[in-house]
Length: 225
Image 1 (tube, rainbow, N blue to C red):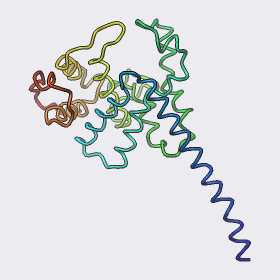
Image 2 (image 1 turned 60 degrees about the horizontal axis):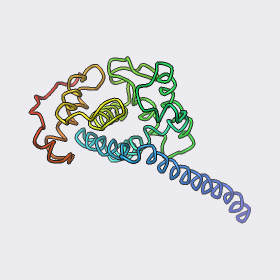
Image 3 (image 1 turned 180 degrees about the vertical axis):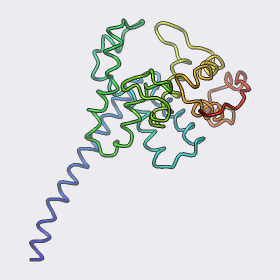
Image 4 (image 1 turned 90 degrees about the vertical axis):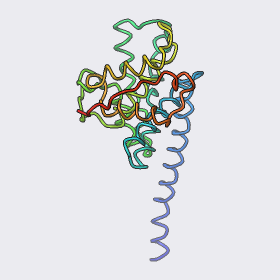
């Protein structure tokens, strides 16, 4: 009976190990693909850097910081399911192209749902294009109904895009990008998250170079809504 009991347990352990191996392989592939989406400028890595700085300022627990890092690195992974002619287009998207591009948030969920380690990161990825005022996508969530990690990634990603060259405009000066975040606090962004990002910059948590140290604004603390 003892031998039978051991024999009965073994397939379960082997199956668990197989699932873990497949999960690790898929996670590795996704990380490589996410990096290539941000190449050559390292967009996803910078979004993760900014998101973690915000998370630490908000005193998030270690597990949530790890989930946030994964979500930030993989936030655009759903774009692998969008036509390269749209993703790589040099110029503004048409209304139709933009509607297709918006699908990347939900495409990502279908890609990631097989990875147990990412289950707590998935809501952050899915909802990082929601707006604090409820006018975002894919579900039109508002305020604190939006997962906190998604609200953090929204600020981190937008800042990186604002200070980067894109086909339709040059990079904004850091001070202008920070002012834009403040202007959109309470509408597009969670004011608490914006303030945490500004604090992280003022306190030197993020090194954005000499330009930032010269330009960083002296902001007044905003109340979180």
